[in-house]
Structures are given as structure tokens and as C-alpha cells.
Image (cartoon, rainbow, N blue to C red; front, side, top):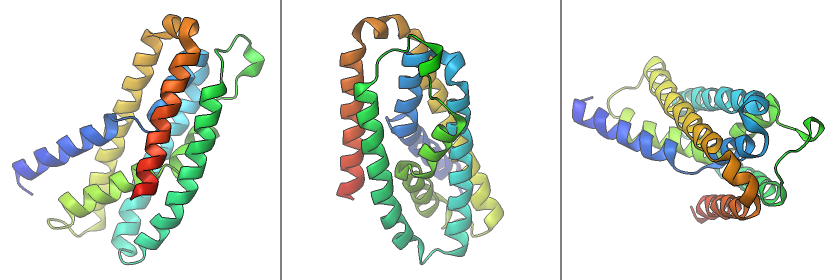
Length: 195
């Protein structure tokens, strides 16, 4: 792989990782509603889920290259349904006033990533467009998917930081912000179902 191709791979990763997606939006919404400290288990679940999904993509692309499109079609609809559920809960959520109201678990973040079709498509498309023509070994697929997961983790951390920076503003205008986040997630669902 040439430097030029690798550079394009990196650009593709940055664009995909930093655009709004279910993990980034949930992370920002969580920090806005509950703060960074309460959200840590959820954030860890998002990060772990990202790595598990990308490693799964590497293994599946290597071992089941011909059967993966059928699996992705099923995951597409499961993921869209989950994102719709998440959209509803973000739109109706209010800033947390009590410790008892918080439901931000590691499992919630992890499961979100397991059904997050965007990161599956991200991992699979990056491999098929940039990697497969230069490398065919499982270790190389894994290395590239770990890079993708790292880009995703950095992007989610950025969304967390942005959420933390505007937390006071959010408390005053949470309804409007939640509606905008919900509409952004609806766009994610639309783009998933359109493909």
C-alpha cells in the first residue's frame, strides 16, 4: 500500500468516525444529561463495542467474505430499529437532577455498538476499498480494523468533550438540543434504510 492510498484511508476514517452516528450522539447526549463522571461506564461500553465490532469485521471479511452481505442486510434493520428507539429516548430525555434516574451502563454502550450498522459498514467498506487489494492476511485485516476502532474512539472522545463544554447551555436549552440530536439520528436511520 502506497503512502497516497494510506493517506486516503486515513481521510476516509476521519470523515466516517467524526460524522454523527449513534455512538457519538449517545455519548454527547449522555454527557449533556448526566455529566462525564456518570457517563464513564457507557463510554467504556461504546469504546469496547467499537473494538469488538471492528475485530469481528476483520474476521468475517477474512472468513466469510461471500456470506457477509446477507448478514449485513439483517443487521441493517435491527440497527435501524434500535436507533429509532434511541432517538425517541433522546428526544424525551431531560437533564438528570437525581442520581437515581441515571441508566448509563457499560452494556448499553456496548450493545449500541453491536447493532450500530454505521460502524459495520465503515469497517467493511474501508477494508474492501483500501485494504483487500494490498493485503489478504487476517493479521493485516485486524491491524487496519484496530486503526478504524481507534479513530472511532478518538472521535467519540471529541463528542464527549464538546458535550462537556456546552453542558450549562444544554441545561437551559435541552429540549431544542435533544430534538436536533433526534433529527440527526433519524437521518442516520434514513441513510441506513436507503442503502
